[in-house]
Image (cartoon, rainbow, N blue to C red; front, side, top):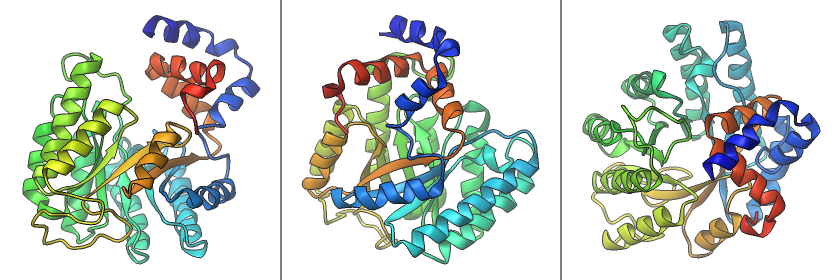
Length: 323
């Protein structure tokens, strides 16, 4: 599969943009906020909720960061005015983290304040290893300022992740809030697992640790072995679709599940998501939109060639990945 993906990646520079757009259309809500809102209104009928991502990440100057502050402010206004059950996901590098940390903190705090006033949660997406600790530090600093509506993403493939879970949980207690995923960034074997089963096993161990330590655990995976493991773990801990059996002094979280939820990328494994939702589990769809759809798609494929094969497979064998 990896070899096929690499061949497809090598053909990307000569692929017509309209063809890439056709492929990306399944996984991106559109180029503007209005298209994302329309899509979420339609998908709300499927008993799911959302997290919205404005496409774009590492920037070249701080003026670009202002665009993301203003656009996420519009997103928050639209969530409220359209009564969408959604929170937001943002990439710290888009707010200037690699250029000026203080400016980035100020930008992120501006969004947090507005989100908090509307009971909307903010998730910091996790990017590559250059900003792993910096992203965690932002969450801890904002929590120290009293913002409890923030959490981060951790990647199961990294060796450090279980230690990060323990350390963050020790500092934040029951307000610790994670999205756990395998991780899309292909890191070196010096800092991460590189084989599929190793990554799955590590991700499952991270899920177990999060649940055992009383954290809110957003399980972001399309892998059946991870989902099945998670359901078994929830059952063994007597956690159900309407009850968090753990001693959790934090109380009910607005727009959240009973200590956990399942998350899916837009356009991926919709049949599985609907099955979980019909069983009563809270499910959330990651909805990206923006003018950077082409860069988003190409960069993700280049970073992980296996994605190219999965995308191609959905075109030639669409029954393998129903929406």
